[in-house]
Image (cartoon, rainbow, N blue to C red; front, side, top):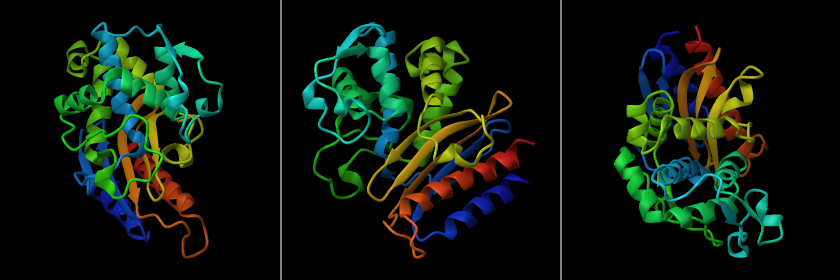
Length: 280
């Protein structure tokens, strides 16, 4: 299948849904790119945590933190609804590295709020600007308890921004010069990439891929938006980048199915279509 035919098929799948979908695709073998509203600002939800992780790894490289240093999980960060540590007794400590791991693989917001405050929101936002993520803006570390109204009231990004970030991480893990653009070493970039492959939530991009397919990705979930942004591998090599953002997803679809299940099925279908088209 040509890239043009692939793109047309991805658009067709999106067009069958009553909700909106933005995506960005890059064939990592040919370098060809395509998108659907890829530069449109969308609610990032927890896909924001990939850039928080990389800003934190830059801070490690700069000597501000050590991966093995202890970080205390305080009660003020446990007032959230995502991850495991909200349910723990406060005051326990884990390593800075493990806080990054939990922030990504189970989207733990106790860790997210802690890491974001340690690194600093302004530093995280400046880091995104320096990388060229011009439409990515972090507005909080720990998500507010009350629902914010409108996309621009929360942390925002674009499908293209997240695709660029993943491309930079992949390059940084292979090359010292590319790693320097991320502000870290190839070893730290590889750690970031490894953490993304340890993701526990597999109901979106990986859901329809062959068993054992490696996907380095981060999901994001809001009341009416369901996202996933990642790198899909084939035979041990990165095959493509696909970042998907759905919005205005209804709680219930016309056929009675939950909206979140339809969004997840769409993202999984897009990933499988791209996989089948590009692996050959």
